[in-house]
Amino acid sequence: MRWSRTLQVVDVHCAGEIGRVVTGGLLNIPGATMADKLRHINEVDDSLRRFLCSEPRSGPAGSFILLPPTTHPDADVGFIVLQPDQAHGMSGSNAMCAVTALLETGMLEMHEPNTVVTLDTAAGLVRAVAECADGKVIRVLLNMPASFVAIPDATIETDQWGKITYDVCFGGVFYALVDVNQVGLNIEPDHARELAASGVALWELITPQTKIAHPEVPAIHDVAYVMFRSTDPDGAIRTCTTLRPGRVDRSPCGTGSNSNMAVQQRLGLVQPGDTRVSRSIIGSEFTTTFLGATQVGPFEAAQCQVAGTCWIYGISQIGLDPSDPFQHGFILSDTWGG
Image (cartoon, rainbow, N blue to C red; front, side):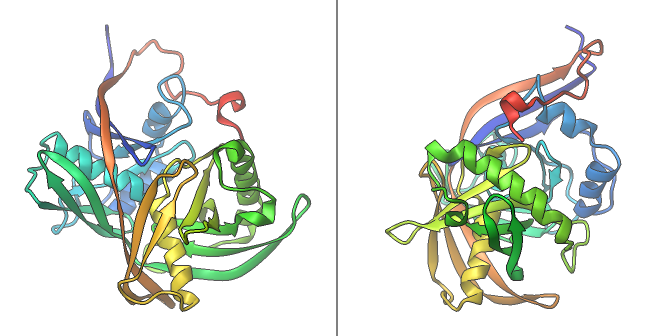
C-alpha cells in the first residue's frame, strides 16, 4: 500500500444523517478567520472536498467535518462542513456529530454531567453543551447563530407548480423555506426522490433572483438549500432539506430548524422559552428553543438553541494512492440525482 495522503475519520450519525469527522491527517487551511478558510475552500482550492465527498471514496449521503485549529481565543476547535456541492460554514447536525466525536474519542476531556465545547464557525462562535453520562454524549444542545428572515413571502413563477411562495431565512446558512403542499407532496419516505428533485429544481430557479449575503459575514452568501416544511397533527414541524445534486437530509436539520424559528418569531408565534419539535422525513427529532430576540444588521433576529443526539458507528482511514485515476472523484446522476 502506498498512500500519498491519509486521513483518520470518526463516522457518526445524528438523527440518521451521516457526519464523518476528520480527526487526523488534516493540515491547516489558509485564512486568518474561519470565514477566510471557508472562502479558501470554495473559491481557491476545493480539491479536499472533491476528494472526500465524491465517488469512489464517498456517496451522496452525509458530510465530512473538518476541525482546523481555531482562529478565536474563546473557541476550542474550528469547524467547517464539506458537502458534494461546496463547503458550508455551519450545520446543526454536523456540529452535534463533531462534539460527540471530540468527547467520546477523548480528543477533548469529557466532564459529566455537562461538557461545554465552543466551535469556531464561519457563522460565529457556537457554544455546545453536551449532556454526558457513563462516557456517552446523551444529547448536544447548540446555541445557534442568530437566525433571521431576510426576505419574507418571496414568490417565483414556475412551469410545473405555478406561483411558489417562500421565505428566505438565515439559520447558519441561507434557506428558501417552502410549504410542501405547494409542490403536491408530503414529507414522507415514499416521496423522498420527488422531494429531492423538486427542491433542487426550485433552488435552480430561486438562486439567480436571490442575491443575498450575511450583513456581518460576507463569506456566507446565496441560498444554500431549499427546505420543505409542513405541520404534523401533534404540532411538530416536519422538515425536509434538499441538497444538491439530489438528495434529502435524513435529520430534522439544525440550521433549517433555526431558520424556521425565525419565521415563528416574525409571525409572533413564540415567546422566550417556547420550544418546537422538528421532525425529519424518517421521523427523527430535534428540539428548538426560542431564547429571545436580538439584532443582526438591519434584521430582527432570533436567538435559539437546537438539541439532538448522535451515535458513533465506525472509525476509518481514507487514503489516496498516487496512481489512482480519480484523484478528485466523480458523481453520476444514476446515484446522485440532479
